[in-house]
Amino acid sequence: MKKWLFLIIAGVMLIACCPQENPNSQDTLPDGTTGTFTDARDGNVYQTVKIGSQIWMAEDLKFLPSVNKPIDGSKTEPYYYVYGYDGSCVEEAKAFTYEDVNIYETYGVLYNWAAATTTIDSDGVLPVGTKATAQGQVQGVCPDGWHLPSKAEWVQLECYLADNGHNYDGSIGWEENKFKIIGKSMATDYGWKSSEEEGAVGNDDCPEYKNKSGFSALPSGSRFDYGTFGDLGIHVSWWSATEYKVFDFNYDHAWLWYLQNSYNILFYNYWRKDEGLSVRCVKD
Image (cartoon, rainbow, N blue to C red; front, side, top):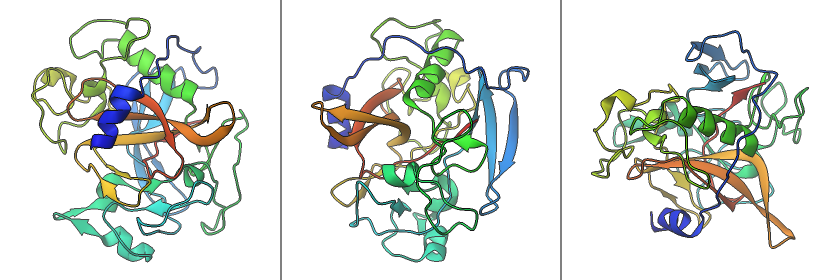
């Protein structure tokens, strides 16, 4: 947890403006429309939700072609993890329980950045590299018709929520160079460790804003780069498809977005590509 507090304090990379709405989205659907999607690769069925002009999966991805132990890490090769599982058998990982909770079914899979951005072929076995959609987005580990959201698409989501009544205090919009106080509206009303911080994801105040967006975030924790799992119930982090260049030469980092139980905002930062984080897919 100390690591993520460091991210909050030392990693405040402010994003001031919002991109244009995606012209390829299904604008005819009413905002908040829900549905389901079945991943043909493994049969997993996902809830979906329309937020603004984007359609998002309302669950973290569960696609698991193989599984790695937490001690194993890589910045370049695809690695897949199930929180708390310390083995290499996919079926065992899918059945693994922690404190009577099936982790895979509840929280999905944790991916390093290489896994998040690597497309798997139709039989679900061989990596085929980074695949682009017809619109040029990075499909990555997402199924056909969906892709790993870019930094710009994450910014589009947060700006839309702040501009359309999802700030926990009832305000509309956001101040330039400020995080948006939309965390509560993105998170489920269960699974989070409690917090007394006003408007925080883990606080029971402002119940009308709990998961108002339908994004349904759960605190899936992370696989940290030093080889352990941590922070289940405390935070969730999602990869973007966008790399971050450090010191003008190092591409070992990528942008991520995350929620934490004791804060009321959606954070963004960059972090090492060998972290194991969750993935949310957005429709092409």
